[in-house]
Each structure stands twice: as structure tokens, then as C-alpha cells.
Amino acid sequence: MKNISRILLIVILAVVINSCNSDFLNTTPADSLSENAVWADPILVELFVNEMYRGIGHGHHECEVGSMTDESHFIHNYGTNQVVASLITPSDIGQWSAGNQNAYRWPRVYEYLRNANMFFENIDKVPFEDENLRKRLKGEVHFLTAYYYHNLVRTHGGVPIITKTFLLDDEFEVPRNSLKECVDYIVKNCDDAASMLPVKQEGAELGRANKSGALAIKSRILLWAASDLVHENWYGSYEQPDLVTIGGDRTSAWTAAKNAAKAVMDLNAFSLHKPTGDAFDDYTSLFISKSSPEHIFSRYFIKSNGWDSEDSNTHSPLFNGPNGYAAWAGNTPIQALVDDYEMTDGTRFDWDNPEQAAAPYENRDPRFYASILYDDAPWRQRPATLQANDPIGEISIRTVYAGNDVTSDRVYGLDTREGPQQTWNGGYTGYYLRKAIDITVDPEFVYDGANQEVPWTFFRLGEIYLNYAEACIELGEDNEAKIYLNMLRDRVGMPDITETGDALRQRYRQERRIEMAFEQSRYFDVRRWLIGPQTQDMNSTGIVINEFADGRVEYSVHEVGQVRGWDDKTNFLPILQDEMNRNTMLIQNPGY
Image (cartoon, rainbow, N blue to C red; front, side, top):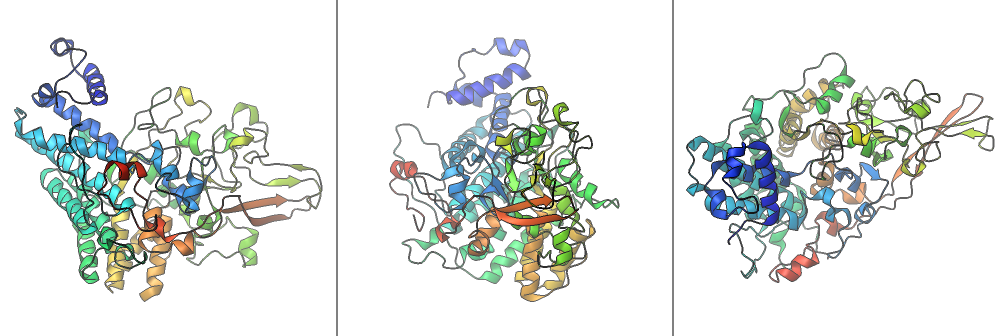
């Protein structure tokens, strides 16, 4: 292997040009960097590791993971329709093959894992003057390796564990490791990273891997590894079940998950966002703030004019904003999620309750208002061309009729597909995404700074509390679980959960759905709980709102034209046929 790949060289050179003085540049040829040159220079090695962070992705992409589960409907399709209808095949996995999902894509993730292996093969020969830097970089790459594999394993089951770099002329015939071996390997990398990294990063190092983040990966993967998905036979007859299941004692698995979450909590390095008395503002700021005591590991962004690459764009206000604000609608929440937000007294919302059905957006969990844009929700100032229609800046979904029935003249809402602005970008569900979107960013001016600096938080204390509570419930420790569930609810002013047993389990799952909405959790929760038939086998729905001259306002739920369906095989993605052809020792996942 004479040279590092052309792509990596371009990245390294670009960063070096922007980061180093001219004297340094004059010592290095402008057209190439030999492998020996990279591993002889601590600066280049650090840049090599910096580039590896791109492999973790983020969740601010145009098409979000939530649109492949029962959170939202992506109006532009991009292969989401076949995912939610369970129509994916080894030759076509829909949106999962798109750049938006690079952090989960088999070929892309293995590219980064190759870089990790290259790093470990060479790091000990690099002439560091500061051994602490060598140790820190090793810890970061162990962290990144764990993160890469935890994404691959949750989407594909057991995968090949590759610990060496392969050259072009090497024979690449590698079998899949068992699911247990993969989980153990992820845990080992988490433990190695935790032993080498500081508890948290601050100042100039903010955004780098830390001990807390490594232990958070461990918490997430051990919770997943204790769940029904990998302990029950949902797949029927399959030639190698150890690729999709883990044997052993469930009590031990849940205990390991509980202990992993507790290890993060016991660091005492993070705390829940303290209530200020305004639950809406508190929950909103948790996802907008660049600095929160709850954030364990996040990716940070810098506002820039123009269009950034897919790896680093943060144009959520444009991607997800209402068309009446010159935005693209994108990932629009579906009615199933909206209906799952409780009333402020902790009871379920019910369309059969006449009072609630007449005013469905009143007296709801504050997290609803901080996460979903609904009819009459306050938002930002309209584009100049529409300010006369709406000087206040409120979401407009309803159709207003001049008479008392739908045959009379009408005016469509500004944020509908029949409104006056960008009809092709109007949503179908009657809702738009609000969570993690900066209201101060004007989506109308994408080339003049319409990207936001809102970080993407991969791990936060709220998730760790939920992980801990779930493990406690499964171990029969209901009272302990409720302590941490009610901490999360208390900070948004919601009443305590009091149930026990299976009723508590269901309340917990409901709480996790709401607390973690649009944070790339629900897709995996549906699968690890084996509840796909209950949550996915129903077509997407939204709301139609009609207002009549006599003052009546009618709300009706309707299908939005996206067919959904469930097949148990989609608990895991298929291995791409190209990968199967490249490596004949691979065994395809069940059902494909």
C-alpha cells in the first residue's frame, strides 16, 4: 500500500492548507502524501482522526430516520415509501441507501472502519512528543469504532468484524460474526475508549469523543441486546440464528443494561435541564442550545453562507419548514404521533371525547408544542409576499369557508398544498416539524445563511434515564424505574407515572416515544420491542380542518396517500446484493 486513498488525501490537504503556516506547506509536495509521511507526522495523524468523525453523521439531514417509522411522512419520498411499506429487497433498500443515511450504510461504514484499522496498525510508530495525545487519539478511534459498529449491528444483526486493512489484491472472503460477538466487540471498544478519554470535553475540544459518550454507546447497545428482538424467534426457520439472536439469561442481559446506564449516571457529569417555570421554553431550548448540562456527546456546526456538503449541512429550517414560509415541508409528523402526546393531566388524548375532539391542540403535554407545528401555532414572520395575509406569523392549515358547508367559496391555509406559496412543497398531514429547529433562521434565504448552528446531540442524559428505567422495569424494580421516568416528566410539568407491572411497561414505552421523538430512537425501539405489526401496519394519516361562517371548526383524520405495511423480515435490513456478490461467505438475513 503506497498511498492513502485520493479522497482522504484531498481532505487532509484541504485541512492542512487551512490550518498550517506556509513554511509547513512548503515542505510537503502539493500533489501527494505518502503513507509514511502521514504516520511520521502527529499533525497529519490528528487530521486523519478528525476526518473519521464524518462517519458518525448526524440527524439534521433532509430525510430523517423518523420518516421510516411511525413518526413522520417524508413528502418527497426518496425511497421512504418502500421502507415503510416493507418492500425493500437486497437490490433496493430505498432511503437506507441514500447519502442522508451514510452513518448506517454498509459500504460507507466499512470505509470508515478501514480507516480505523489503518490507524491502529500505525499509531504506535508515530513520533508523538506528547504521549497523552497518542492516548487520546486511540481513545477517540475506539469510540468511533464502537459507534460505527453499533449502527451496523442495529440495522443488520451480526456483521463481519474486520480488524485489518485489506489491499486491492487481497482476497476478501469474510463470514459474519455472531450477534453476541459483535455486541461484545462494541462493548470492548467502549470500555477501551472510556479508559483513555476524559469524562467530558470542553472548550476547543468540545465535540470530540469523551468517556461519557463511550459509556453511553455501551448503555444503548446493551439495552438493545437485552430486548425481545434478539431473544425471541420472530424469523421462523433460519440457517444461522446466532446472526440475529443472542442466547443466554435475560435477567443477566437486563442487569448488564441497567449497570451500563448507571455507570453514565454515576459520573455525575451531567444533569437534566433545570425547569424555569416555562416547560415549553425549557424543552425547546434543550435541542437548540449549544450548551446544555444534559448533552453528553454532540456534533456542532458553524453557520456559513451557501450550500454545505451532505455530511455537514444543517438546513433543517429549509428542509422541514412549512411551504408558506418558502420551505420544503420534508419530514411532516403523522397523526399517530400527534395523538400519542398526552393531555396535561396525564390521560390519553381521545378523539371520542367531544371536548378534546373540538379542541385537539389544547391542554397537551408541553413537549407537543415544542416538537410539532400545528394549525394556529405561533412561528416566525412570513416572507414579505405573504405578510399581508398573516402579519402575526402563525401556522395556517385550516380551510375557511364563506358559508356553512363545503360547497361554499373557500380560502385555503397558507401552509397547505392548496395555498399561495410553493404548493409542491406543502405537507399532507397538516403538521410540520418544530423540534431542534431554530426559529430565527429564515429558510427563504438558503444561500445567505439559512443553515442553523443547532448541534445534533447523539447522547443525552434523558436517554440514559430512559435506558435505566427500562432495564429496571424488566427486572421488576418498578419503583426505581418510576423515579427516573418522573424526573423527565417533572421537568416539563407532567404528572407522575404511578402504574406497575405491564401497565408501567406500556407507559414507559409511551414516554420514550414522546421524549425521544425525532432523535433516531423510535425506528429501533419498534423493532427491538417487536411491535411493528401494531405500529407500522397502518397507512399514514393527518388532519383536515374546516372552519365555517357560523363559527364551527371541524377536525377530521384522513389518510395522506402513503401506504404502510409490516413484514417481520424488516426487523433487520437485508445485506446489499453487491456485498453478497463481493463476499460469498456472507449469509443473507432471514426473509430476504
